[in-house]
Length: 199
Image (cartoon, rainbow, N blue to C red; front, side, top):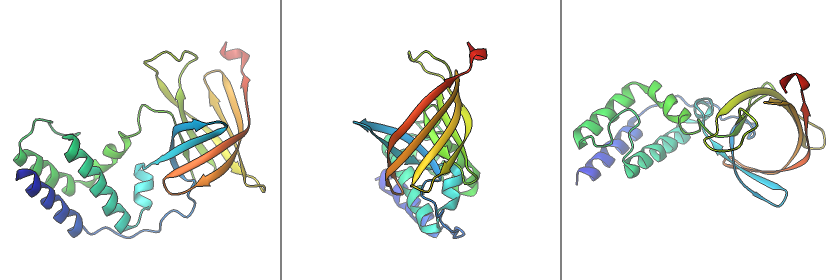
């Protein structure tokens, strides 16, 4: 019973929350993509919403995303700024505090992709790649963020150049599928240029 009251309270807050409608990002590539799987030569990525991507959603999409996030939190009994064993009243108090301090939403989103490898495409042609900090692939793996460049070519391929622990990686991607939530790419070319100074 308490669960239903909590859920209805949350939905009421979501529906009554007024958010400024903003223009949705026109380039579907912009954002954070986490590698999901590989089939033959095709690599599948899923989109992960960062705080920047979230701000670019229109008000309806923001409400849907908030509902999805909190539904998952409720189902998994996870409250990142509270105790998992908190009582119903404590959870409701946390929920109300959350809506008063919307800035708490950013670390909530960010925490969903930290500690993973990902590609973040930025509007100005910059790319941030989160990948292994060193040559060893034995868990636990430490991830570092490397800043590089990306550009679109006339034949609908994309050139990427970014550093890694041993030098620079240069790749050419052909994107075969691109939607709001999924991207499939084929690496047409990929090479690593090692820097002798780093060895």
